[in-house]
Image (cartoon, rainbow, N blue to C red):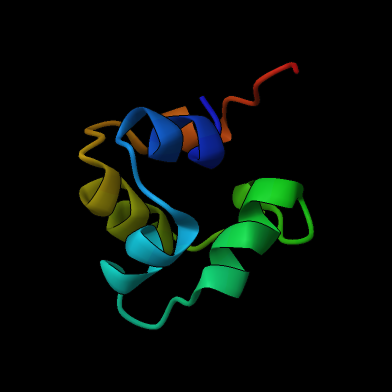
Amino acid sequence: MSIKTLRLKRGMTQKELAEKIPGFDRGRIADYETGRRSVSNMTLGKALAICDALHVSNPRKLLDDDIE
């Protein structure tokens, strides 16, 4: 699932998610969601921080893209 899908399933805004991750802001979350920043090039630390904030146990879920 994409970051956006996981975030929306948790009922969170981009800003709320960013506030849970040190060093992130709404713009960075938006960049990952829109593809301006590649999730596949994300550091393990950033991936784990996003997973923690979204309560996701497997970071590989961040790499699964949704077809919309």
